[in-house]
Image (spheres, rainbow, N blue to C red):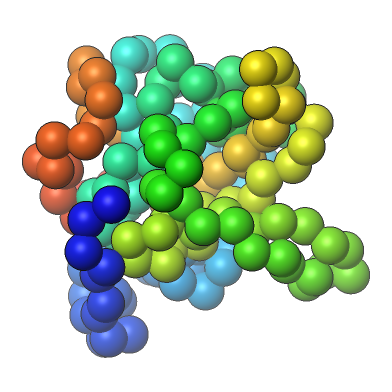
Length: 148
């Protein structure tokens, strides 16, 4: 994983749309079935909208019926960080970008084989690079429109 990205609140607000900021920096959630990447079927890699780090390959994406893009594994074990989240009177596992700490969504243990995991992710927290194979070349930039 590349060097950690640390920015002030002012810098994040400048670099992100208001919706990207709300979801990634304030741990918000986009409404179900509204995200730009829910039904995308192109080959490529999904990157963090905040820092450009590669997060998920399109080959790990599947239709979960949850209303959010779902993946059964990240590009690598060190691409994301999982932490316990007890907000909303329930215990879930939050998923954040390991490079910049952006809130991406949550992971659940009801996904398909081979992992049995469902990384339920906000489209607005992602940027898609079509036809990119591994997402590890470091060419992804930050910012841009991620969806909803």
